[in-house]
Image (cartoon, rainbow, N blue to C red; front, side):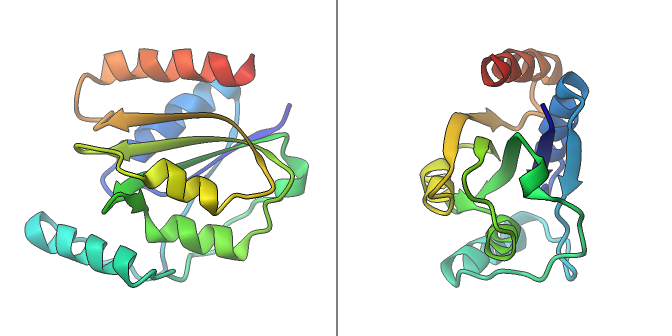
Length: 159
């Protein structure tokens, strides 16, 4: 079974999860990167993220390689920004035809997933969502415990 993990990571949490999945499933990994991404911290980071979500921004992404038709399973990962998927994921889904696929979803957050998974699902109509999960700061809080959680989750996806 060909599996691809497609994700965006701002603070490294989704990258941490994606790398663990890659190891367990021997999956292809596609890290989405906006062409213009300014690093922010503190209040500026939060303000920027909320503004991007509220205005439904879809940043231009650096080129990536993915043939969804060649994948049996696509795992999508995103940080939660203002209770929503990150804008880079919206860009990806606007520019990539994903239909009739088996999908698994993960979100990473620093305090709550909000409606991020439901909003992500609404962008993925015509697909089968086989599993979903959220992670609280997986790269920073108890990484060994988080690795076990990821491993257990991957087992449920793969049957």
